[in-house]
Image (cartoon, rainbow, N blue to C red; front, side, top):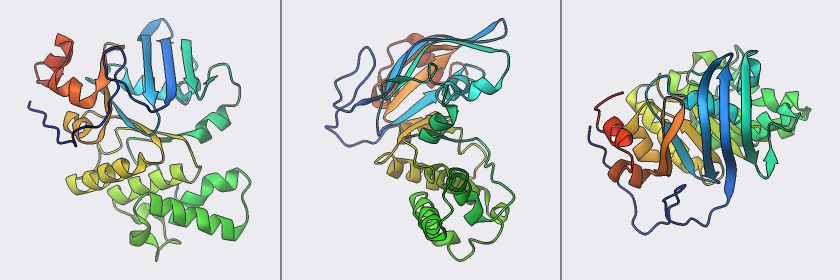
Length: 273
C-alpha cells in the first residue's frame, strides 16, 4: 500500500521521543495508562502527549485498543462495570481520573461516534439538546447556538430552511455533520471521533475530512480511523496501536514516510492488518 502525503513545507512538527520541536501547548498528557476488562488487559502502559489544536489520528488493526484508548480520554469506559484503569490522563493540568465531575469532563471533551446517533427529534432540537440540559432556556440564545454550531459543522446552508424537520430524514453524511454540530454546541475544547466516516460514501467522507481540517483552528481533534489514507490526509500526528500498545507515535509525515519500527512499516505497507 502506498501512502502519499501532500503538505506545505516548513511547518514545525512534534513527535513523542523522536520528533522535532513544536511550540504548541500540550493539551492532553497520558502516562503509563493500563486498562483491564475484568482479568483481560486491553491497554499496556500507554504514554503520549497530544498538542492543542491539532488533529491526532490513531491507526491499527481491529481490536488493537485504539477505540478503547480514545474512550479513556472522556471516561466513557466508566460505563462498563468490569473496567479497571491505572495511570494518568492529564487534561489542562488536571488528572481526569482524580476528578469526580464526569459531566464537566464530557462537556469539555465531546465525542462523535462511528454511526450518527441523532435523537428522533428535529435538527434544531438535536443541536439545542445539550445546551438545554445545561440550563440554557432563552430562545434567542439557543437560536444563536444552533446556528453557530451548524455553521461550524459546515451544514447550516443545507438545513437552515428545515430546522424543524426530523434530523433522521437527512442523508448519512448530513446526519454525521449534525452530530458534529451537536458536539460543538457544548463548546468543548477537545473532540473525539471514533471512525466518523466509516459508514459514509466517498463524497460525504470528503466533506467531513474538510470539516475536520477547518475545525482544528478551534479544537483539539483526536480521530480513530481504519483508513490510513485518511490519517495521512488530515492528521498532524499519528499513533500506531498494536495489541494494546502504542508501537510508534510521531508526526504523520514521518510515520508514513520513515517509520522507526518494523511493525509500523509492515502495517502501513499492507503486510498485515
